[in-house]
Length: 416
Ligand code: NAD
Image 1: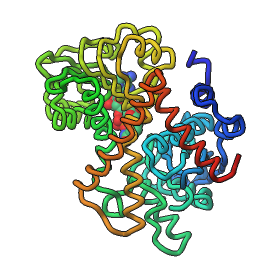
Image 2 (image 1 turned 90 degrees about the horizontal axis):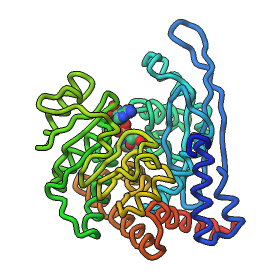
Image 3 (image 1 turned 45 degrees about the vertical axis):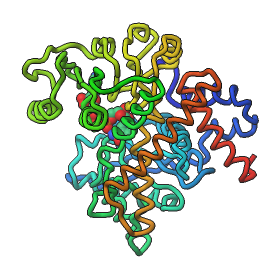
């Protein structure tokens, strides 16, 4: 069913389900089904060979009732406006569920950064800001890195925006390098936020996480830090991890630094000594206590949901579980920590970066961790209690919390 819909139709369908349970005012529902503002731009860029290539770019400001828009910028050859619209809607719910005073947005450029030189990428980044900068700013819309964009690209964009304003404006963008006003603790923030949620889920389930067997799908930023922090903060025993080439399994547990060294050396964790290689599909169905999808969307489906044995699913990836699978997992009693709650640690620390930029005063790592913990823990419990009170699965509960908050802001402003 997911395959027949484009991502924005899926996002609208999820909102419709929450609106029905909330009995949402039809005017507010209609407003929240659409982005409030979109800018489509055409970007001429001088390439290294002297030719000019013309790129398409977008910025979607989905809803800013709760505060300035926040959301990443993607550089991807298959980018479409409907993907950006869906991601902008999800950012609106993500900032609302963790209760930070921001709206939701997303942007992108249709390009293939793997085929571009650093100089070409810099000129494209600056061209994007020259066009889209007119709707950005710390009080309007603050982008951040996303697929195939990184701190260096954020640095060029911040510099171009500052040049347009005639003064430094670090708060126009987050995910900057530390030397240009980035925040301590941004690197592992997504996984850390997910581990705080897992800790709270174990508390409500009365489950001891010390030695809890764990499988992690994907070993990039989210997956690697999930193993590192899961062991350090919670005492998890990670027995299986994977990447696009396959999964490695060892009943006695995998050493995080050994896996990382293997992946850095050969580009994949597959082949690590004393491990058995299994498939990514088999990883999902292992008899473990905790399953952490941290790679792709739509991996837990109506086809395999019944065979998931984990007690808790920690969704660090965006969209790993289909709506049909959600219902099956709920009926089986699997505790799913839904993506836009579970992986919100990154945007929370991005928000902290903006606050520090506004004050021009920077917090130490301990302060960032402490504030992130408070935000994630509070958000987890509001969603958990809503799920209990309404008898719904956790994703729908997260939607109910987020949509109600955005709807309240819309109503108080008198928009509807
Ligand atoms: P990344 O690019 O650093 O890592 C992705 C990992 O997934 C890599 O190890 C890759 O080998 C693996 N992978 C790719 N195809 C796979 C396949 N078919 N099967 C198994 N593994 C596969 O990406 P990331 O930043 O870690 O993001 C991972 C997920 O987490 C995405 O869904 C992303 O949207 C989500 N997320 C990340 C952040 C963040 O701050 N990094 C924030 C929110 C959400």
